[in-house]
Image 1 (cartoon, rainbow, N blue to C red):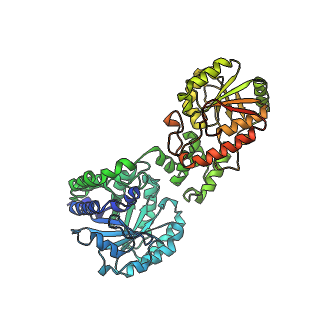
Image 2: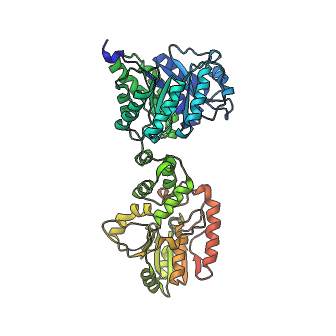
Image 3: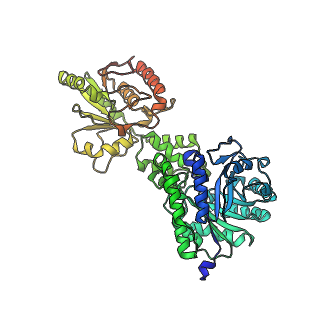
Length: 535
C-alpha cells in the first residue's frame, strides 16, 4: 500500500442537507430513502441527512426536522451499512432539549455551523452535544472572513471542547488554493492532535473540486474530511460534485467508492430538481465571489435592471469591511444612489434642448406593447405632425423614426450602443451613464436632479424625463407606449426588457406614475396616443 493510500481521508455527502436549499428540503419521502440507500451502498464514509431546526414542523417528505426523534421516523429503518450518519444544526435554530442522547438516536454525529461572531456560544453548544455522546463537528461559516487572530481564538475555544472535527466552510466560494493552504496551516499547527480537519466547498469560482483535491493532498497526521453532493446540488453555485471527488479518491487514495450508485441517484433522484432550480457556476455567483461579498448584494443590483455588469462590479467593489458578508439592504441602496449620482452642470444642455423644443409637440415613445399593437396610430400621428420632436426612452422603436433617444438606464444603453452609434440619433443621457469609447452623448442631464429620492423606485425613466421637460418649459407631450404595468401579463414589447420585480409592484407603480403625471399636467399638456392605465 502506498503512502497516499495509507492517508486517513474520508468523504462526506451533504446532498440531503445543502441540496435542500434548492427545493426547500422537499425531496419527497421516496427520494430521501433512495438517495440515502444509494449513498450507503456507494460506501460514502459520512452521510448528512439534513438539518435539525426546531422552527420547522415535522414533514415526512422533507430533510429538515425539528428534533433527533424525527430522524428516526424517516431514516430509522434504513441500513446505513458502514457509513456514519450525521445531521446539521445552524447554531441557534435547535434547542439542546430537542437533541436526545446519541445512544437513543439514529445519528452518530451532529455538525454545527456558526458565524465567527458567535464562535464562543457555538462552541459551548458543541460541548453540550458532545456530552450527549455525539461526534460533533464545528463548521466555520465563511472561513475566509476570519482574521488570523480570530482563527487563533477559534482554535483556543475548539481545543477546550475537542470536537471530532473542525471544518472550513467556504460559504461564498471565495477560496483558491493559496488561502485554503493558509487557513489549513493555521488550524493544523494549532489544533490538538485528535481533532480532524474538514473542508466544504462552494463552486462560485469553479474551484470546489480542485480545492478538495488540494485539501486531500495536505501533509498531515490528522484525518481529512471533504464534503461533496450528488451532481454538485446545493446552495448558490452548488458544491463540489461528490462523484468527481469519489473518482479521484478511488484513483489516488485506493478508495473503493461505487460511483455507479452515485450516478444512479443523480439520474433517478436529483436531476428532477435541476431544471427548475439550475444550481452551479454562473456569472451571478462569480460576481459575488470576485467581490468577496454576500450574493444578495448582487441580486439586489441585478434586479434593478438599470446597471451594466461593469457598473454592478464597480458598486460591489465599494463595499467595505464586515458589511461585505453581512447583507444590508439600506447600505447597498445608498451605494447604488451614490454611484448613480454623477454631478454635472447641465444648464447649457437644458437651455439648448429648451430652444429646440420650443413651440413644438413632443411625441414621447415608451417600450410598452402598444408600440407594436398600435403602431399604426403612432405612424399616423407622425405623418400628421411632421414638425413634432420624437423622443424614445431607453429603446429604439421600429414603428417610426425618432429624433432623440433618452437614456437613463446603463444596462439598456449597453444593449443599444451599436445601434445608437450607427444611427442618426441625438442622445440625451443622464449623468450616471458612461458613453462608449466610440462616441459622446449629445446632451447630458444631471441624474441627481431628476430622480425622486422619496419614492421606492427613485429612477423611473418616465418621471425623470418629465421633470426635465418641466425645466425646459415644454408645453405639450403626446405619449405612446406607456401602457402601465400588469401583475399578470408581460409589460414590454420585448421580453428581454422585463424587470424581475415589476409584476409584484405593478399596482404601486401605476398609482405612483398616475399621481406624478397629475402634478406634471399643471405645467404641461399631456395626451395619450395609445391605450394606457395612466389616463
